[in-house]
Amino acid sequence: MESKHPFLDHKSKSYNEEAVDTVNTLLAGYIAAGKGKVESLQLAISKVVPLYTKKEVKTSIGEQRKVDAGKKLLLHLSNNLLKLEHLLAEHLIQVKLM
Image 1 (cartoon, rainbow, N blue to C red):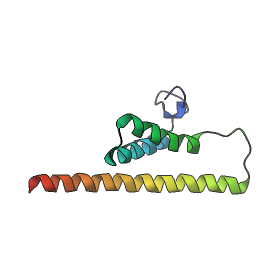
Image 2 (image 1 turned 180 degrees about the vertical axis):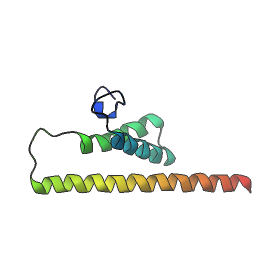
Image 3 (image 1 turned 60 degrees about the horizontal axis):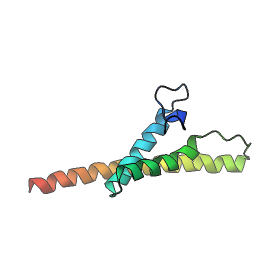
Image 4 (image 1 turned 90 degrees about the vertical axis):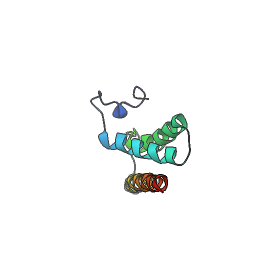
């Protein structure tokens, strides 16, 4: 995946830590939802790549605003998935202690 999307490769000059963090958060959320690891990784990457891939076609201001809003929404959702994962982990620990 890193060779196809260099911004996900920590050795690349175009490495984007925010994009990788978003992939990791979505990955954890998909796994917590019961999806397999490979499917979860593919889904996470498919959601993140369009947000961090440079478009060769010029976009209008309205289209750029949509992209920016999509990025903000995805980051918000990924943060909420991470919080949910932590809550589920805490709940499982409490259940096991009972």
